[in-house]
Image 1 (cartoon, rainbow over the protein chains, first blue to last red):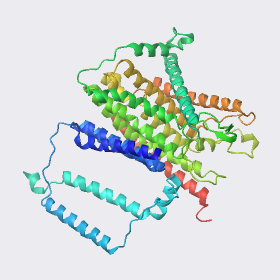
Image 2 (cartoon, chains in turn cyan, purple):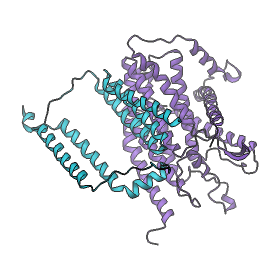
Image 3 (tube, each protein chain N blue to C red):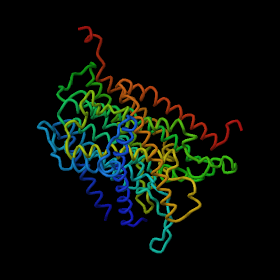
Amino acid sequence: MSELVIFVVAGAGALAGALTLILAKHPVYSALGMLGTLFSLAVLYVSQLAHFVAAVQVVVYAGAIMTLFLFVIMLIGVDQVEDTSETIRGQRVGAIGVVAAFAILSGYLWLSGIFSWEVVGTGTEPVNGSIEATGQLLFAEWVLPFEVTSLLLIVASVGAVGLALFKPRKAEDE
Amino acid sequence: MMPIWLALAKVLLAFVVGLGVVVLLVWFERKIVSDLQNRIGPNRAGPFGILQTVADGLKLFFKEQITPSRVERFVFELAPFLAVVPALMLFLVVPIARPIEITLDGAPYLLSFAALDINVGLLFALAMSSIAVYAIVLAGWSSGSKYPLIGGVRGSAQAISYEAAMGLSMVAVVMWVTTLPGVTDMGAMSVNEIVLRQQGTFFPDLLALSWIPQWNLIPQFPAFVIFMIAIFAETNRAPFDLVEAEQEIVAGFNTEYSGMRFAMFFLAEYLNMFTMSALAVSLFLGGWGGPFLDTIDGWAATALSFGYFLFKTGLVLFLFVWVRATLPRFRYDQLMQLGWKRLIPTALLWLILTTLVVSFREFGAPWA
């Protein structure tokens, strides 16, 4: 019963934060909305006994990343017109191609049945979300996916920088 | 399972201790600074001016709260609360006295004096200290004025820069206490557990040296130095008080605040100082530990351990005040240089060294 109450309250908080994020006129309020969502999710993690994930959620997302967002919003100022010009030739076609390739790959994986969804913790046994258990899983069983994910994040951030900063040689000369 | 009234009582006790210490701390700081500057300091309200803070608090309580016309009202009113709440929450994980065995509902129960004795205590403390910066950032932005905005932007950059070093020094401590000789069970990320593992002595067999307590301060001294520098920066105290540098940006993020709202920022700053000092005491100075605790028992020992805790925290707080009265403020580029080019590399290096020592201790030498 108490879990239901927590779920409803925190879930409503997460939804309200998400709506604020996309509907707010001012970017700072958007950031605050996102902050609300992150905290509500942390509460939900606690109610699932995943204390470690909840703490990390607050330390990393609320503490570091959102602070950085706010910093950037304030430093750049909010009156800037967003630059939506495309700097890489054919980037739209390229993006569609990459998405199609990803769809084909994931569709193949799904149909071939190599991977299956694993649902944990539906039984009576509670999931152990302590630091020790999480550490064991992360650094023993799931160490390769974990490291690959970090590689993916680096690729994504390099890609974002490339999209924003890459200028064709010709445009530079003009 | 802890009954709910006990949990409430613990939280209430933590708040009372926190707020009580803050009232004394403001007076303590003014007295020490005036001594260091060859002045007299507050000496009118109460004996030695000890009630000066109460008088100032009452004055601020009755003052008008001015709301400038260009503020973002909702955030402007929210920011002071965001300052106080994390500061109080952080204090919850710090054990303030030795646990005592009591009888609860007819069964023996080990009553710990950390209001929130959780497995991820240290991460919780890190989380609270990292969200404390929102108060400064949002107060600076919502004031709708130049100087507060500059203070707010400075605050966010500073917090991000020094949090990494603080976290890394904590990791070294956690690894150290997790693999202490004789420890068989795993993790020690609960602050309570870290304090417990610092009781006793390094040399139980040598009578001549058995007075040296088993504090992390000795094996983890570099981590202690990094941690202290980082908490000075995290609490925005001199020489890192760039967010409210009076000579440059009026009063920084709280320029437009007055009355009770200003008092809340003031309260939060001193609460942060106290809680961070208490955390430093718990991580490095053996928390509530001290001599003669084992010779007495019951509530007397608990009271004595609380006294040790307050005494040690007082020493760290004196360091805060001493540094404030001694060192000039950093320039902004110096602050960034120190954080990114000195502190974080040093912390990483120390972490690697600690890892080596810890793995030797845990698995033996690789050639053996």
